[in-house]
Length: 322
Image 1 (cartoon, rainbow, N blue to C red):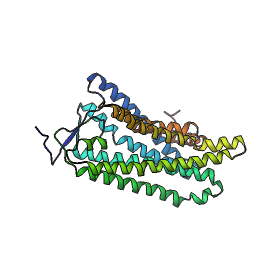
Image 2 (image 1 turned 30 degrees about the vertical axis):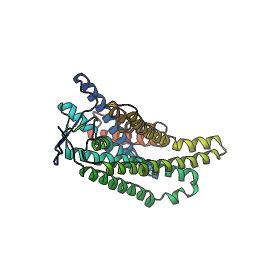
Image 3 (image 1 turned 60 degrees about the horizontal axis):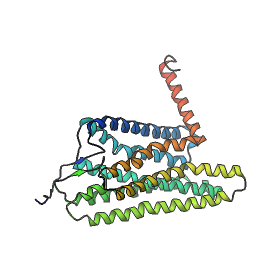
Image 4 (image 1 turned 135 degrees about the horizontal axis):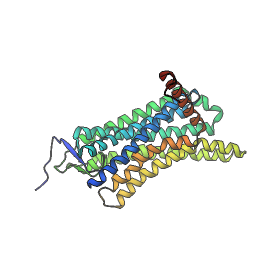
């Protein structure tokens, strides 16, 4: 029998990582732990930046926005996966799936654009230090974040609307732990040519373009660092951008690894397993990467903890707080 087209698809089935019951508790505990670490770590970055006036600079403004996006990024996929494991259900409604596609696409593009803006900030700070405060004024870095949001929203809306034009067959199983755009398009019974063209065009424009900008920025940064005479000056300049360069490398390398691994194997769950690296692990590691080598951020965290301790003493009357 030929597959029957459905004009009103009601639900998809997310197959996840494994169908073995004994592994579900392990998967649930692992992803719940990673999700809580991601939310807590990135939330600490946001609170530290907002509580310390010394961190009210373009670099930390971008970092707090990146932390917020990382929280939203993981919240788009992980809670639904945890809910499905807890309820022993694989179902996600068609509306829920399209919503997940929209927000996942939105936040991953926004992640890329913010990393690019942060690279530009480091380029200006190191290559044009005397003009940094003039170039990176509040109007400019606010506008850069606003434009990043607008581009991400419009692109995500276009991708989601293009999915709505597709028709689907009765087989609606997605071999993933969330509604991944490519997987959904592969399930379509109608011609997905325009969808594929849009995906490839967006990948070149919104992933390849920013990557080229990042590489150019750091090429100029490294050239400027090489020209600094003192070893201490070189170390200070390089350490100011080392954390961001590490995050960029981790994000792009893991994202590239997903597509290489899925292209090199025919396992249905290989793409889902590889996707964990850039959808869960990278947002979880970002707060640690930025805070471990950053003295200013460590000081901001210290001030935040001191403020919390003082409030705790005040509220509880010095009885329960150390």
